[in-house]
Amino acid sequence: MTQTLPGPALNADGFRRALAVHAAGVVVITAQSGGVPVGLTATSFSSVSLDPPLVSFYVDQASTTWPSLREADHFAVNVLTSDQADLAARFARKGTDRFAEPTRWRSGPLGAPLLEDVSAHLICLPYERVGMGDHILVVGLVTQADLHGPRRPLLYHQGRFGRFVEHS
Image (cartoon, rainbow, N blue to C red; front, side, top):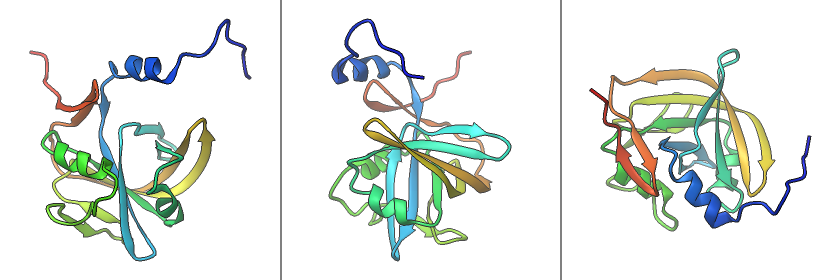
């Protein structure tokens, strides 16, 4: 159901500033498309459902990585740790070979690249894609989850990557 706002919608800069106060976890989505590894950083990752096990992320429709990622038959979610800010920045940058040194990775059970030293790998099959404004909501069915020990998460807040500090 669409409702009419009492005034114009918030402009993009105001919206971006408002959302910057929300801390978000950081993941890198990876896949293999046409034999070539592809990947991008996402801070919009979320669980969707326990039964079936679904997760989601959003990707900008203008993303140069999206066309290749869209063609992949599966993808991996690499949950980054607090010391992987450089890796997150590398996968967010355009015009760079994201899988070249110093990126450390290996092929997963179905071929998607798995980044080394992350907190977890989730292997997903595409489940649903829906256009939402200038982004695409991508939902994946989780077929495998591998946890790699308790580690502190990498967070994105106020336009910067940072670390989680527990309250005493």
